[in-house]
Amino acid sequence: MCAASGARGAPRRGYARPDTPNPRRPVATYDRFLKLRKHAGKVDPQRLFASFLELVEALGWRVSAICRLWASDVDLARTKAAPHGRIRKREENDKERVEIWVPLSAAARAALEWVLSSRQVVGDVWLFPAPRRPAQPWSRHHAKDLLDRATAAAKLEPLAGGDFHPFRRKWVTERKHLLLTDVAAAGGWKTVQTLEQSYARADSETMLAVVTAPEAPEGQVIGYKFGYTQLRKPAAPQRSNTLRGFQFA
Image (cartoon, rainbow, N blue to C red; front, side, top):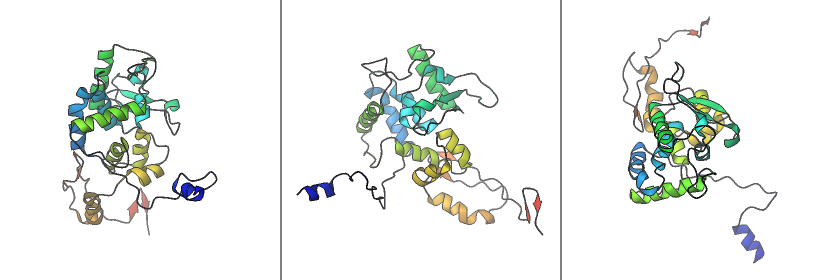
């Protein structure tokens, strides 16, 4: 009886957990984000979840890192490298111990401006304080509870295989046309291996681009869509025997 119970339970200490052959790794869509965003204000008495969702959509970070943002992590000064300002992911709040300043998008800046102005906070103060213990930040469990409420309010089916992870996969998949080193750095991955294995997803449009790219006329605009982003395919390079300034015999 005990042996059977142990076989059905968690793996015993000292034994590796077997890999799941086909893990569930769904990808969220932009339409889903919009529907959740529409109901976000109704499910959160603090009126912060809508801005929180905007940051999930814009940053691609782990939800715990967004929960633990300070007001001092936001720098709204406009520079050439960061025209909409920048945001800091602190090492102590990151699973992979990554600390980095990341440029903001216009949407992320607008969300942060709303939170800062509505809360009137500066310095090392939580942007998303816990409802009953404001000296503490939101937990990822509280954020998930709000996501579940918004999902129900929007009459959407829950995505199996993760709460906010499908939005990270969406974020990565929409940026497959960019250098993965930069995608990993902006999203908080130390290396590209985890990003490629668990977050980037293959899609029919990109596979079509892969097999037809050498044949595409120079300057042709390809209407590939990753979620809601329209991408312009760069001009096809002239075929030659040169590579980065090196001449092949």
